[in-house]
Amino acid sequence: MTTALRPYPWQQGLWDSLCRLAQDRRLPHALLLAAPEGMGKQRFARAFSAWRLCQQPVADQASGREGACGECRSCQLLAAGSHPDLLWVSPETDGEKVSKVIKIEQARAVVDFANQAAQLQGYRIVVLDPAHALNTASANALLKTLEEPGRDSLFLLLTDQPAALLATIRSRCQLLPLSVPAPEVALDWLRGELADAASAAILLGLARGAPLAAAQLADSAWFKARSELLADLTAVAAGELAPLTAAGRWQKMDAGEQVTAWQSLLDDATQLAMAPDELPRHHDLRAGLARLTATLAA
Image (cartoon, rainbow, N blue to C red; front, side, top):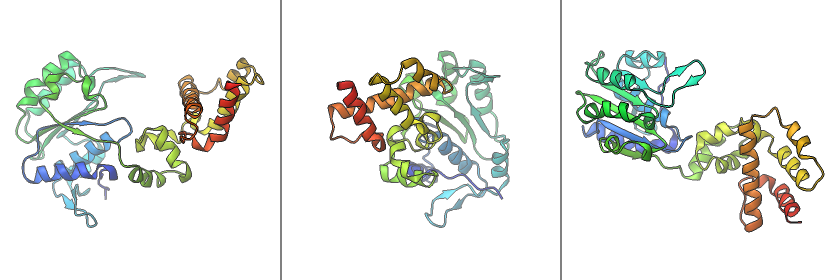
């Protein structure tokens, strides 16, 4: 038995709204799901696609919300990644090289797909992820299909940069902004995902409230080494450690992660110097940040 995907807790309001529209036969044919990275856009799109494609949708006993059954042929094909009526389009990968755009050839394949009849006599669903990867040529190739899709066709466009989309694309879609969840909702979910639940609030603050980004950050090398990085930064500022020696200690850490770490710690130190009563994002390192601030001010 396959477990059907469900939306994240902070997505339930949007899910309920779309379910009501679908049940009233008023669901738009093109939906633009806009949300920052780390908010679970892809999970929502997969869960919603599974529900619309499911041959025997069921209601959750606890919430009463309808969703995919996880057992029918459609759900089994989705779980295997071989559903003939779902087309997920992203920039192509060639070895380790990932294209920055969705190419016109991919857009033409979308048009062909949307014009075909559903093989399982249900919906035909196209997901563009991320939609802002459409260039001018590929976007223009989709305009007519977005405006006049085939019967029972659904487009889901995912983006964290809605302003980067052509106005002609945006105008043909119903915008669905997915806002950052209330802290208590995000923290409740995040604590269940972490080995160290005590760090949930720190991680969520560093991820600007995006729960999935916070969960991913917990495994990053720079987050695990914050205390040591701060100690070395303070020692360099105090003249107790040569910059090259400090750099040598951290040369095995990814350069991008190092930049993120130093910038994050220095941002907090600056905030602490200007507003000492404000809680820094790295509030568990407040004493160390205060020492760095004092050292820099000396």
